[in-house]
Image 1 (spheres, one colour):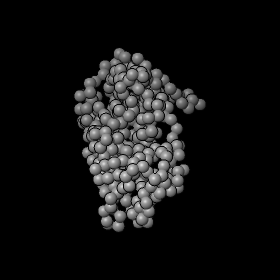
Image 2 (cartoon, helix red, strand yellow):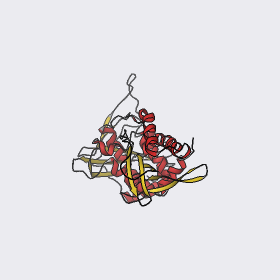
Image 3 (cartoon, helix red, strand yellow):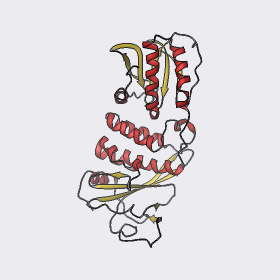
Image 4 (spheres, rainbow, N blue to C red):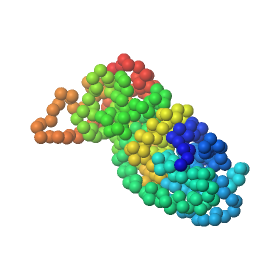
Length: 327
């Protein structure tokens, strides 16, 4: 079996992702140290591509699209190609799938279309849909965390901010820095009211400080913002750091993101109504850290109202992220 492509090849292509919708960044496929006419590529959405030379004209066989796997015939300046593509969330399946096709064409000498058709049939079960729809509550919360990454943490810290994003690991707070934790609360209400879902969620970590970011969204069919727009904006900010970009996409997949969502109709559409950034200090509305529920009470939820609480600005928040001495 050939050893191309690898994780490193896809990671290198992420740094070269084009801006134009119809463009591809490509790398020639090597088999046993020899460069072939096949290539792998990546488009501006991060989709993975394999290009296999074929005869011009109608394909000799019809190969249907499978879940998250698209098969097309494409004409480029270099000639006619079979183009296979899959979203980045399916890299672990697409990589060995590509290796099998490359091996069949380059090592076994098989014709492109019959080799592809046989490989698709063999891998058909691997492409069956297994992803449940992302519920609205998850979309709303994830949207808010991406907003904080986009406008606060990446501008303040650069690509290393991705490593501080702990929301996908279901930690107490959504972002964990050396000197600071950040909790993000996102609501579709027209009022800055947020539900606190665990007793220690607003506890200030020992030796650190805590910020709460409140985000208010308006859900509307005419909304210009979705999870996809926030995702793409963060990807653009991370484009020059392949490690951070890989880490970011891994975390997105872990919370249920799939590129299928772009065309599935399940994406919610928003307008950003308002936001506020608040240091959690003695005047912040919360249960005292000394509070202990009665025996037998194992969970507690309560709602906080931030309407009359003074907020800090984004520039000040960026400075607070970059320093260790505040509040």
